[in-house]
Image 1: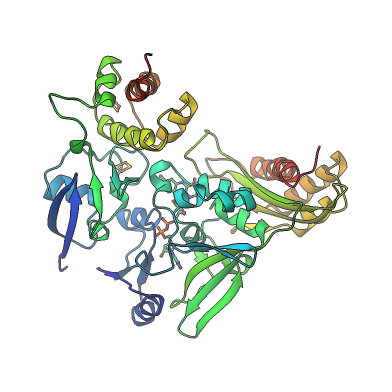
Image 2 (image 1 turned 180 degrees about the vertical axis):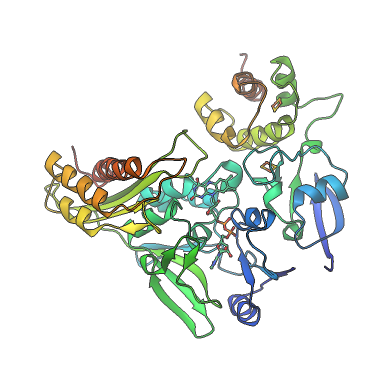
Length: 286
Length: 160
Ligand SMILES: Cc1cc2nc3c(=O)[nH]c(=O)nc-3n(C[C@H](O)[C@H](O)[C@H](O)COP(=O)(O)OP(=O)(O)OC[C@H]3O[C@@H](n4cnc5c(N)ncnc54)[C@H](O)[C@@H]3O)c2cc1C
Ligand code: FES
Ligand code: FES
């Protein structure tokens, strides 16, 4: 295996294009574990951390563009980003320990393709859009369209994600992310939910997005759960309908962390609790 | 495999080493630079025994490649205190009997020092949260948390 530092994005793309079996190295908190365990056997590691601009969080058209190599610790320390997208930031901050936060990137969390990746449901709920760079140039792809299955994304073999855009959000809007794990920190989600809401002046939900993690081969958007919240002030009946829609959309595995039945039930619970937090963050009172 | 030539600083001293492309910083520190303070508990980012700072940021050195630290500043437990003048964290860990086998201790010292640099007056909860990635099989954590809190108080100059 070779290790190379890409000096810019075109070089990283060219290296990917020229080497079957190349892997990009961002924070390495997934990849170096896979390397150690023999689960990944790349012939070349392309370190993208020295690429100009990849380490930036930039305001863009009222939203925020987060570069591919920005660490969790940097995202958590960005006050304006946290104020605009508290749910996405809390999801990123749940990734691993302080030590892991110092390295792990949100884009790496996405590209690793784990169905339980914490930042992904929050990005789905936020309507995040990834900038994908490849031999043909750049294209913008909704994060939802990049998810293909456990360990798989829709990226081509010579493509990479250079940044993710969290769009501008309305005045009365808020998001939240919650996961269930057996301990209070440092574990993989058994089920999780990201919710993003926009309210009118009377506190009625006018737009909603609900996403679930760890209950299907990828994180999923659940439009029926979002529709159950729209037009409501999160009355019990709306929350119940949201939970039922989440249960219906769940198709989890059974494993030592939780049975399929438990994950399904918990998905709805996480979604309704996250919805309440998002609602108060949007300025609504429950 | 051809070796990679790397320049960095460790505890303020310039170092130069050759490493394999897949060799992690933890192994470079221990096997090439003879700095055996950082320990390997798991090798997969879970235990924190290998904690060091990289350009001021707390990291697990088992999840950083040696090749990645070119031009970087690394701080390890060897740079904290001396045998004659222990760092307050080291003294309070001893005073509280907050170690038994001691395998986790270097990582805890490095991690706690990074916490106090960022937050000199952490609550108990903040200490527990920050150190959640530093596993200790022996002490049950309580003594460690108390030692960090009392070292922090001393470092702030509080008469606690
Ligand atoms: C102790 C520990 C605890 C953890 N806890 C959690 C947790 O609680 N929740 C959670 O979700 N995850 C957790 N993780 C997993 C991991 O930390 C995250 O998935 C992290 O966000 C990965 O980011 P990275 O930058 O380290 O990725 P890397 O390991 O560098 O990369 C991950 C994958 O994505 C690819 N990749 C990276 N960047 C790009 C790019 N720009 N374009 C295309 N492909 C790219 C890489 O080639 C690799 O296949 C944990 C890991 C450890 C070691
Ligand atoms: S050896 Fe690095 S975290 Fe355990
Ligand atoms: S003292 Fe033994 S692991 Fe902490």
